[in-house]
Image 1 (cartoon, protein in one colour):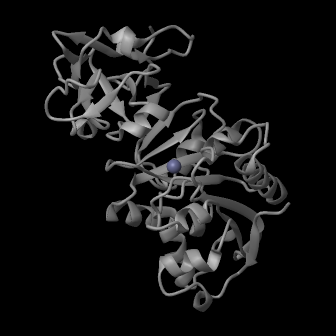
Image 2 (image 1 turned 180 degrees about the vertical axis):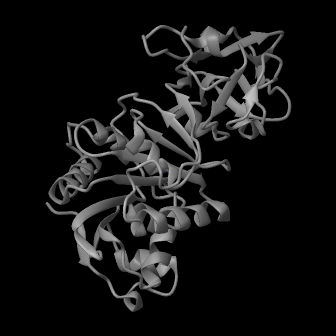
Length: 344
Ligand SMILES: [Zn+2]
């Protein structure tokens, strides 16, 4: 069953007067085909894999309304339109009980989300783009960064269109960027917080560069000097451990994290930084694995006198201050302070 609607070279006037009307015009998963000045090549933009991450859709709407022509053909995939349309708009990551779409890009493609992911892969295969950018927002505020599964000059160049921070990580979670392994350079770009105007602006500026540059895969285009963060380790909660966020330790929870913990995003923390409070030893609360599959909990955090500290000088990122995300995904990612990999 085809889930996607296909639209070729939409008129600026038919898109609606604001991004909410644009969502209604899309009406569901949509593939927009934009013919470029040089139609012999194609690039792909994927966005709204998560319905609560609006920057890519806002940027695309703004660009389409401007009536400009891309340098080469562009295939735009706007995925979770239905989730984004749920009231209030752009608040649902996915529809209730649906799997996270950005964990579905590997077989089996059995449920509705799997089929949607499979169709996205099929669209990309048919158009064989020279590059794929998958644009996201982070749930909390924070700076922009790119993520790719391996690092070379092409991935470096692609990410540099948007940001100077690049996380190299191959966790094999079934994310779209894992496509890099078998097809073309594919990067995830997290343009910043989902509610932040700067994130919307960066998404638009980067999208203009990505759509309008002659070449996007050679490093000289925008060489800002990337900050690399290699093979981060995820700090996860163990089953049945309870977590809350507060200024002081809460008696009813195993772990209390400071509500401003996300302020450490991409900044360095030292072994004296208090991240929160805990009632049990670190290994009973957390799990973490290094690239070799060894337990890395004690390389990341230390519980002493009821307080949680980093085990050593670390750089933390993708820190959540949302307990639901901490439970279903992870609390944060960490690398050593110089950006290199932590080994347990
Ligand atoms: Zn996302």
